[in-house]
Amino acid sequence: MARADINEPGFWGRLLMVGIPGPRLDEVARELVRDLKVGGIILFARNLESPEQVWELTRDLQREALAAAGRPLFIAVDQEGGPVQRLKSPFTLIPSARELGGRAGAGEVERLAGQVARELSLVGINVNLAPVLDVARGPQCPQWERAYGPDPELVAALGVAAIRGYLSGGVIPVAKHFPGLGDTLKDSHQTLPRAQFGPPRTVDLLPFERAIAAGVPAIMTAHVLVPEWDSRPATLSRKVLAEVLRRELQFSGVVITDDLEMGAIAGQAPAPEAACEALAAGADLLLICRDWQAAFAAATLMARDGGLASRAEAAAHRQGRLRQRLAEKAAADLKEVKDFFSGGAG
Image 1 (tube, rainbow, N blue to C red):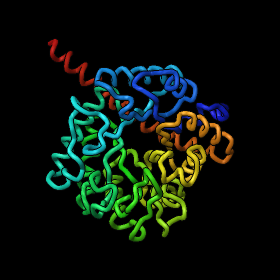
Image 2 (image 1 turned 60 degrees about the horizontal axis):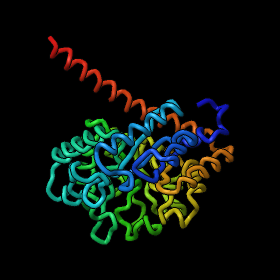
Image 3 (image 1 turned 135 degrees about the horizontal axis):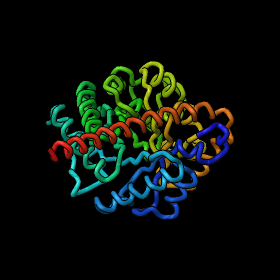
Image 4 (image 1 turned 90 degrees about the vertical axis):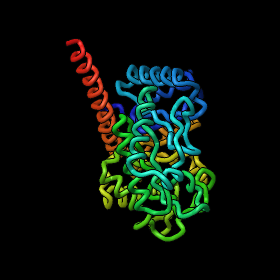
């Protein structure tokens, strides 16, 4: 989008990934895609009924997006496994990360992730908000069931395997939650947790370092306070996102925030203000899962802040690289199909 359009909602809407009300392309969903020109949609149980319905919904969303903005949407879901998997049977039911960490090797995790990715691709979902790379220290941690275990080497190995599997199946994986929720005692859905054992450098950062080295294309932020680094939550911290993640760990992919309506952030700032802070800190895709009016308000507020234009351009550029990756995979798949049938005809 040209810089001349900087005051238009669509210039800023592309920085948002939003939830929609129901299982169909209703008027609210249409306004978010057509008028706000959001960059992505996240799907929850309220949006999912059957494989056929999900495919119809994603098809309609993409048609609307291409007509309105000329670019496809990121369509995401939390399909981690265990307690967090939005798509139920007949989709593959995935064991929890805790169970996999206790019995599965990297090969099994990679094969399972590849299968999950292929199923998601078949119904038009191109982003999985997984794997969880938190190094949960024990059952007192809210991430205990969602994490592979307390050993950072194990978490790194299985996390990288999952990333490879998702990529092989044509879905963008999102490693989460940076810089790590593994040593927290409170649930960030409700309140702001605090890192308990000092800066999460050696233990918590190791899985993310390995994931970055393996080419993970996107990372989700944690709503966590690391006092040794900053007085603001990681999602809103330039120290965490721009200095640690970008400069020190050399991550060049897309940074996605966790939901800006969660209690950990709502206690700091309303979602529109938090979106501005997260963008300024270094995030590229801002997640607002329920309040569609807050998404419009966030775009308006960002547009009023003249200092955010360069950050918005950088974020859009990173998003564009990620969309190109999806386009290249789709083109490769199409070529494989054509080659198969042309060879069979002979």
